[in-house]
Image (spheres, rainbow, N blue to C red):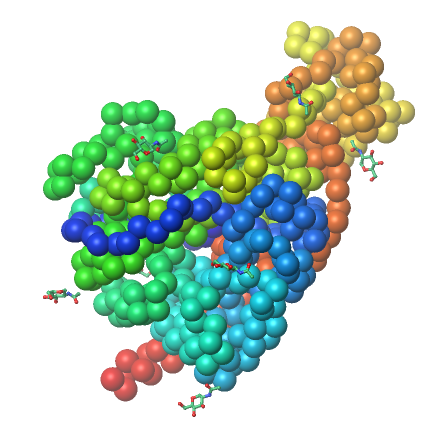
Length: 501
Ligand SMILES: *[C@@H]1O[C@H](CO)[C@@H](O)[C@H](O)[C@H]1NC(C)=O
Ligand SMILES: *[C@@H]1O[C@H](CO)[C@@H](O)[C@H](O)[C@H]1NC(C)=O
Ligand SMILES: *[C@@H]1O[C@H](CO)[C@@H](O)[C@H](O)[C@H]1NC(C)=O
Ligand SMILES: *[C@@H]1O[C@H](CO)[C@@H](O)[C@H](O)[C@H]1NC(C)=O
Ligand SMILES: *[C@@H]1O[C@H](CO)[C@@H](O)[C@H](O)[C@H]1NC(C)=O
Ligand SMILES: *[C@@H]1O[C@H](CO)[C@@H](O)[C@H](O)[C@H]1NC(C)=O
Ligand SMILES: *[C@@H]1O[C@H](CO)[C@@H](O)[C@H](O)[C@H]1NC(C)=O
């Protein structure tokens, strides 16, 4: 994702979208809901544990961001279909020639077949918005990979596409007016759409209604972003009524595609989700909103509701994301898109009744220990001294400069210390008392980046040490810096091409 999210906050990517016309897209069987599984965390389950977890929960579709061998091996023999990825940083090397692409396919795809059911390859993620310098190599890479699949007779089973950011679609409301970013519409998007059409593939799009809501708060209600009942917004060109951002964005994509004469295939949502926790200035972020979005989204997708422009059409969708990823860069929300904590307990309950894709889960009953209100500072200070001293609570985070130093108050610091003591004593009854100045709460006292642990949350440290295969966009800005010289090289090559032309 959260490329669009990271992009919006870190890289100042402009958000917007598209247009209209009539479509003839065959509606297939029911739509599926899949999961994005990113690895940018230092406390995640091992690939085998994660795959066992997916099986246990009946998940049938997963998307990963690379071709991680441990995950693909763990998926062997399962009923789970997987879309793999070529990370942005690897596009140049994979797409260098038809030979490098063929070798990549041999090593990273063919090796795992047929035991692992690889059904798609996402080439890069939000390349055109976030790595504009790679624009010129995107299609050649896609074509080389496709030729390699054809040569191995794998092209029917495995579809290739590339996830675009919603921001690539401009003037997205009303949807009937939308069109693709003019810089790329004719040069890259049109040939891309031709390719997707010819190969029976689909357009991948990342949709983050929270970002759109945050940028349009003055004119948009949060109900419209969350699929909650609202009066909707009419598209005056089509007289279609939009009651949620998700549908409006997809119809904007359909309009932009139609403008390029493509009404012959559909879109798949490669990422969509809502974070459960954010920094204090991140409007609209909460566990309740995350739960509302995910539950309404799943209902919407599984019902095959379609969109106002294309009622009844299946919109296959991958939720972003399976587990929270604590190493993602950027705002706190970036680390908190997971449906599950890394310890595999749910962040909130997600009902997928009728789908059979993901089982119904219930949130864990977590408890925390905090300072009682109205207690004198001196009593709290005394209790905190005990907790941090003899009590062996972890009080490192409330020291100056650490993540829980602010708010710099005795009640806040005491709460952190009490909770640490309580958790270290396995939340045993009696371990949250401190002579009557502490109390147990079911409301998570975490604030911004300061996380109050509870249960086994944050108590695992299984390192899988594969940062490179991190979730989509998280590390984009950093990677960009690392790739600086290469990107300049590509830019130079492009200039050469232009000059030659
Ligand atoms: C690569 O392309 C060249 C020239 O078109 C062709 O001769 C060669 O067989 C191709 N190699 C592979 C592995 O596809
Ligand atoms: C792989 O997934 C496809 C659906 O895309 C399905 O038709 C096929 O039976 C699956 N293959 C195996 C071996 O499970
Ligand atoms: C289109 O994309 C380019 C490259 O990312 C960007 O510089 C430009 O601002 C975009 N155009 C619009 C109108 O947003
Ligand atoms: C779309 O098709 C129409 C009618 O055939 C044609 O006039 C127009 O140029 C086409 N547009 C594109 C982008 O190919
Ligand atoms: C399910 O689809 C029907 C039409 O097929 C629609 O009337 C209804 O509102 C949809 N429900 C949800 C939750 O999207
Ligand atoms: C969590 O609490 C609810 C309500 O208090 C209770 O119904 C449920 O069984 C509890 N779940 C677990 C896993 O303890
Ligand atoms: C944290 O992990 C340790 C070691 O694995 C374990 O002994 C302890 O019970 C765990 N604490 C909680 C609260 O789960």
